[in-house]
Length: 65
Length: 226
Image: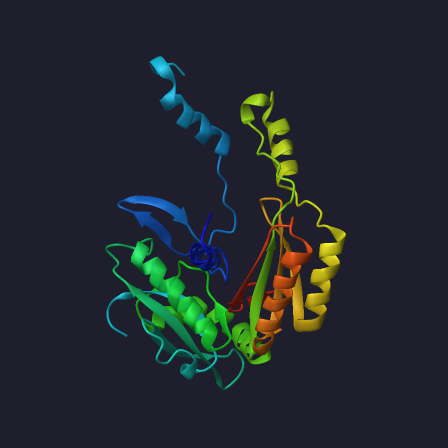
């Protein structure tokens, strides 16, 4: 169970990252040299199905796909 | 401004609204209004960050979240979605000029108001469909869409929160959440915040099986635009 303090921090971060006026075409969040998230896009498309498939493929036993 | 970068937090009506808040970099702007002689005065708040680390740095995120809350406790402001970065006032002016007139009008109109958010979870959890169980992508997407569609709220609970909104809110907006829950954004006078919280506490006892979360005060987020 999360404490009130954890909940408060989670809620605050949720509002920070997901609320407010979007100024289009802004800011790439990066860790190292890898771009993780592009904020401010009007549409984000991701083939979740393909990502899941790719992730599962790596963990199959015996190297099979 | 120092030659470093800042991630913007919000737009404020008065410079005093940000003065003295620890960690805030104020950026005061005069933005010429098209077709008029005068200029729109706005103060932006920012938080400094090291460009080498970027804005995903944990300390920057936590500092921005803290500052955001402290500014909301101080006065009404328009929240800017995390991610807009500037080095100086000229760059800031270029990025926010298109919003300045609208923001200024809202800041005047909603001065003394805060947002409160009531997130209402779905009482019946619907599992995300597994793509392996579908023969076609279309069928999978339809099932995914269905699983994410908002579930109806208990009518009694809905009536109770409508009563809270009618008593305290000057404006309200319902928002469907991707997880099947719904959210009610309330714009209330700052001094009504405690009364809204008290009413929400009473709902906990009255509807113990309905998961919900009330939070606030927040800056203008949902009501920062139409």
